[in-house]
Image (tube, rainbow, N blue to C red; front, top):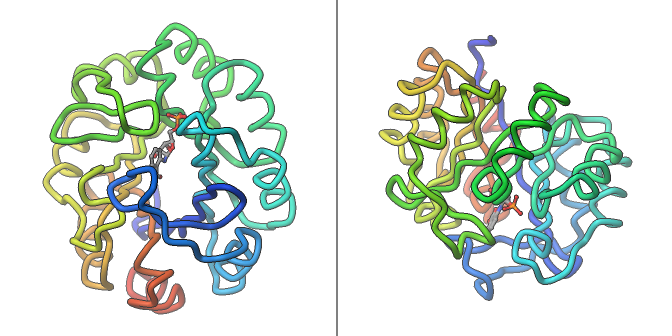
Length: 241
Ligand SMILES: O=C(O)c1ccccc1N[C@@H]1O[C@H](COP(=O)(O)O)[C@@H](O)[C@H]1O
C-alpha cells in the first residue's frame, strides 16, 4: 500500500452532461459541460484516476452507457466506473469499457449472492460503494435504505471484497468538509483499503484525509471543489505528495 493519498477527480454524468449534485438529490444538478472535456482536463492536469459515474443509471432514469464507454476508451488513466451496475449484463458492459474497476452500490444491498459471486470472479476489479447517512446504507440513487454499514461491511469482508468507496451522502456536493470520523470508523472495522468521498472543499481537507492513510484510507474523490475552482488539481496533487 502506498503512503501517498490517491486523488480521483469525479465526472458524474446526467443526461449527457458532467454535473454535480447536492447530497445526491436528483434535480439539484449544476451542469459543467461535456464529460469528455472534463475528463481530459483532469488527465492533462496529472490525475492518475478518474471516478466516473453514470447518474441516470444509478437513478433508474436511463443511462449514458455509450458516452461513459467513449470517455473510458479515450483516457490513458485508470477509471473507476459506477452507476447502475447491478447484474451480469451491466457488469459485463462496464468491465468491457476497459475501466480499471467498478463500484457496486445498490447490488451490494439488494443482491448479495450475486455480489459475492462477482467478487470471487473479478477480484479487485470490484469495489463496493458504501453510501451512508449516519450508519444507514443508501441504494437506488440514495433514495432507499439498505441496511447497517457495519453489518454489510462485515459480510463483504468475509466475501473477499477488495476495496470500499465510502460516501457520506449528507456531505456530498456540499463543500462542508469530509467526515473524518466515519472514515476512521470504517478503517477500524476493515483491513481493506478505503476511498473517501463527500465534502472535500479545500486543500486542508485533502491534507486531513491524507493523515488517515496509515489507518487505511487509500484515496479521495474530489468533485465540486475542482469544478468550482476552490483549488486546482495540480495544487491538490502537490498537497498530498
Ligand atoms: O455520486 C453521486 O452523486 C450519486 C448520487 C446518487 C446516487 C448515486 C451516486 N453515485 C454513485 O453511484 C453508485 C451507485 O450506483 P448503483 O446503486 O450501483 O446503481 C455509487 O458508486 C455511488 O457512489
